[in-house]
Image (tube, rainbow, N blue to C red; front, side, top):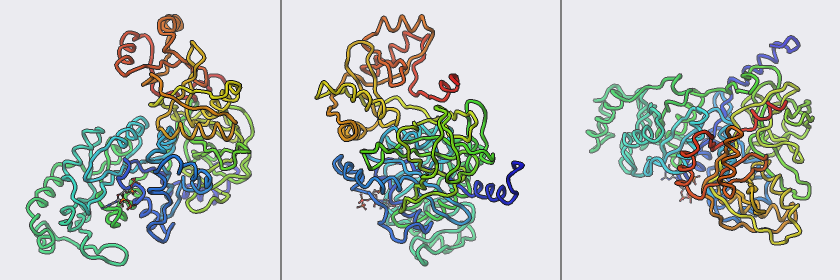
Length: 541
Ligand code: G4P
C-alpha cells in the first residue's frame, strides 16, 4: 500500500483484482464459441435471452457484410470485451474474432488474457485454427481450461479426445467431469470430485437436476446408463485410475488443462465450466516489462495496447486503442503517458468495451480492458504509465502467412499509399514490406479479410485506390545477425529481402522448403517468426 492511499481504497483494489478473471475463448469455427459465449452471458445475467449475441452467420459471412458491420462499428467495438459477474467473480471475456475476421488481432488478443478457454467439438477433435491459436498460448505459457462441446450429439470417444489433446499440445488432461454416454444415449455428466451426476434427462428450473451417487453400483446410475453401462463404467474406472488430477502449478505453467464436458446448445455443464474458470483462475497476473516485473497490486497505473480498432468516423481518423490494465487503478481523467513517445494521453473519453453498451468508464482495475479513443498517437505494443519508464514485453508482431503485391491504380498517389500503409501497419491492421530492390510493395496478413479491409480503408481514409495481387512469397522471417553476415546475406539474396514498416530486415521466402534451406545454410543468422518492439524501444530510452 502507498503512504497516500487510504486503507479502504487499497483493500477495495485488492478485492477487485482477486475477483477478476480475464479470459478468451479459442476454437475452430463452428465448434460453438458463439453459443458458449451466449450461455456464459446468460449465466452472468448480462443477457436475458439466448440468440442475442450478435453475429453468428452474419458476422462470419462475406466481406461485403463486414463492410456493413463496420458502419455499426460502435456495436462491434462494444462486443469486443464482455464483462459479467458470476458468484464472487467478475469475468472479462475478450472476443477473439473468428472466421474470416481472423487476423493478427486474434493472436495479440491472447497476449492480453490470463487464461484461455479452449472449445473442442466432440465429433471433430482438435482442429486447425485451434492448433494455431494454441501455439500462441504455448508461447506465453497461458493456462488453458478445456470445454469439450456438443455432447448431445454422437462424437468421438472421450478418452480418444483427451489423448488427442495431449498429443497435439503436450498438455496433460485432468477431467473435472465425465460424460455418461453421448448423443442419444447421453445420461448426464459425472462430477469426478463431488460424486454426483448432472441428470441430462431431468430438467430443473433453467438447468438440470443433480443426482448424488453412492458408489459405482448405485441403482440410479445402473438404470441411467442402460446398455452403455459396461463401457461407461470401464471408462470411469480408467479415468479415476490413470488420468492426472488437477495440479495448480502445472495448470498455471500451461502444462495441464482441466477438462469439462458439456453442451453449449443445451446449457449442459456450462455452470460447472464457469465455476471452474473462477476456481482455477488465475486472477490478473504480474507482467514482465523490460525493466522489471510489474505486480497487479502496485498502486501506480500501468497497461499496454494490444489492439487498435479504427473507429466509425473515417473523416476523423479516430482510433480506439484497447488497453489491458496491468497495475493500479484507472480513474477517468487521470494523467497518463505513452512511454514510447513521452506524450500525455487523454483519459477523459475512456470507454468500457462491454457488451451491449459503449459507456464511459470511471474506474477500472488490473485485468480490465478499456478503450482509449485517439488520433493515431497510440500503437500496438505501447505501454502506458503515470510516468514510469516501462516497456511491457510479449506483445509481438507475428510473421504474416498470406502475402500480396500492392498495385496502385493511380500512380500519383504513391505518397498517400505509403502513409496509409505505414499507419495501418502501426495499428497492426496489416504489415507491409519494401523489397530492397525495385519499387514494388508487398503486404502481409494472417487472415484474408485483412486485405479487403485494408483496401477499403485506404480508399476511405487515404483516398487511395489500389488492389492486391498474388505474389510469390509464402513465408516471412525477421533476420538478424552480425553486420558482416547480414551484408553477405543481403548481397546473396537481394531480391528476397525487404524492410518492414519499422525498417527491419525481412526474408521473404517463396516456399517453406526454400526457407528451411536458407536457414540451414545461414546458421549464423537468426530467422524469427515474431518481432517485439519493447526491447528495441527500451534500448533507445
Ligand atoms: P462458432 O461461434 O464457434 O463458429 O460456433 P457457433 O456457436 O456458431 O456454433 C456452430 C454450430 O454448432 C451452430 O449450429 C450451433 O447451434 C451448433 N452448436 C453449438 N453448440 C452445440 C452443442 O452443444 N450441441 C449441438 N448439437 N450443436 C451445437 P448451426 O446450425 O451451424 O448454426 P445456427 O443456425 O444454430 O446458428
